[in-house]
Length: 109
Image (tube, rainbow, N blue to C red):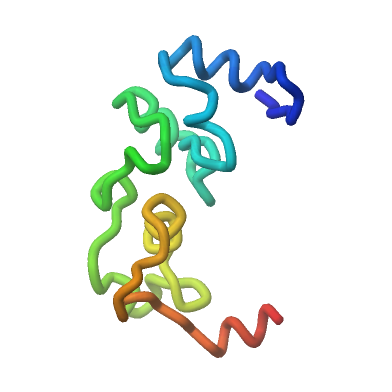
């Protein structure tokens, strides 16, 4: 369950055995269990679908719908849960679609 930085890690060993993937595929926060605010139900579903890495997840998996963050009550701090998870899984887009909410950024600083 826990990762170690040593050569031997029970987490790596377990995930290698269960998935058939190399341990390097799960380092640096790239496993689905590292998903921010991932529910047990979501994580169980991803693993059942053989989606072990964040990069395996799709917009649909995360429940992301374009423009959903603009609906009243759908976002906390200017960003929906699914949008935040999408950025974690796929990276921040290089185009102008990235949401930067200065008000919330200042509050956090």
